[in-house]
Length: 97
Image (cartoon, rainbow, N blue to C red):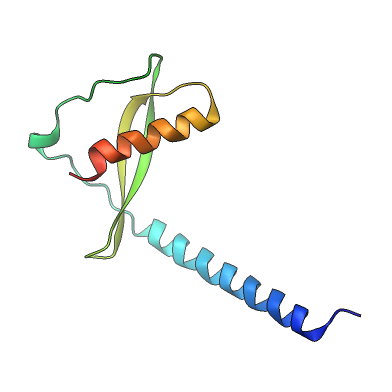
C-alpha cells in the first residue's frame, strides 16, 4: 500500500507542474516580435565558423511582464551543447540592448 503522504506529495507536484506548463504556454502566446533599433543593427563578429541558421531567442522583460521573441542568424556548431552555448552568447550580446 502506498502511504497517503506520498500520494499527496506526488499530486501536489503534478498540480504545480501543470500550473507552470499553463503559465509558460500563455507567456509564449504573448511573445512579441520586436524590431532591432538602428543603433544596434551593427553585425557581431562570429566566433564560430560554419553555416548560419535562423534561431529564435526568447527574452523576458520583467517590467512589462512580457516574453519577446527575437530572431537572429548565427553560425552554429554541430554539437548540441556548443549550439546552446552559442545561442546564449548571442542572447548576451543582443538581449541587453
